Image (tube, rainbow, N blue to C red; front, side, top):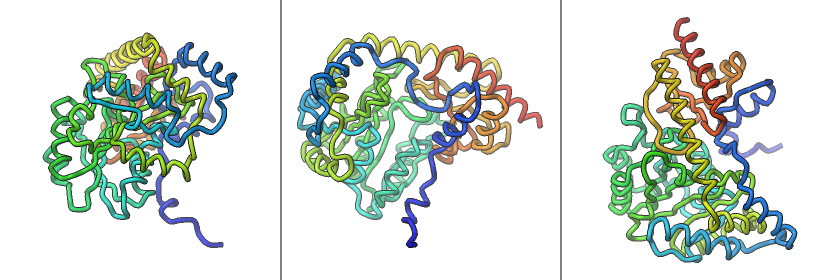
Amino acid sequence: MKPYAKLALDIPRSGIREIMALSAEVEDVIHLEVGQPDFPTPAHIVEATCRYVREGHTKYVANAGVPELRAAAARYFQQKTGVATTSENILITQGAVMSVATACLALLEPGDEVLLPDPGWPNYMMAVSLLHGTPVYYNLRPEDQFLPSIDEVESLVTPRTKLLLTCNPSNPTGQVITPELTRELMELARRHDLFVLSDEIYGEIVFDREHVSALSFDTDERALIVTGMSKTYAMTGYRVGFTRARTDYVELATKLQEPIVSCGVGFAQMAAAVGLDGPQDNVREMREAYKSRRDVALEVLRSHGLYRYTPGGAFYLLIDISSTGMDSRDFAIQLLNEKKVAVAPGNTFGKMCSNHVRISIAATEQDVRKGLERICAMIREQAEV
């Protein structure tokens, strides 16, 4: 029998999903490995979902998404950034991950280079590689508080570079790129005529400062802004993401959705519009809870001498395990088996955090505290071996 595609075989499995699968076989696990809100979807969104199902919004919808959600997303971007946005600037996708994949499909020729953050969400590399692009990594170093260096990013640009990808706030670091640095990155992209894909799925989960979108500095429509409903509104299972972009990109990407997913889910998209346009009290409450949990995690790390930095957003934190001398995957598996805590190994996000593990604070405050205590105990025990 002829072989499977080599490229598909060579793509590594996400370390996050590996730990999730292993943890399913262990009882009484504290789950800090996956970025899924532990809050219920807000009641008014659930009620709207049920209503739209009963009304018959269970059929095919337009490739670009239902008009109600495209209009609501346009209003969201215009209110957030002040940049004029209409429905024609909005593409609805099956989750924000599909927005990233569709962008690679629309933009990349074989061999085109894409500047990706290291550490960064592994799905970026997977999408770029599967669509025959070439990942080129810019480093987010611990000593720089996991923020990009403009000089380093610029040094990596070649004639083959076509796309610069940023994640703000970052998965896995939780760091927030400052407005000044965002402006510099957009200026760099203009100098070298690069598209910019700004993943802002955590843009409403920022604790100590206001999040400023790359769209605010996009003077010539080269930015694709990706976000969605999963994290902000605890709607991961609804699979509703969207891209804000120039109209000709939206037209092209709309066509490309047909052979991949055809279209999204009508009642989910209609309910998402209710979420964007409706009361935001739940969003504020969840954000405040995540900030409180972050502070609990930092308190525990400080008490064990393991504090390194303060994440400004999202619900992630990298923990330095370099004192153990262990590979982060080995550490994560041993931690799961011995301490019953599931975390994501740092090396699934890149070389820069291969001696770290990522925790998600999208868990109860009690679990965050208890899980961190067990992690710190494991680090201490292994460092003494």
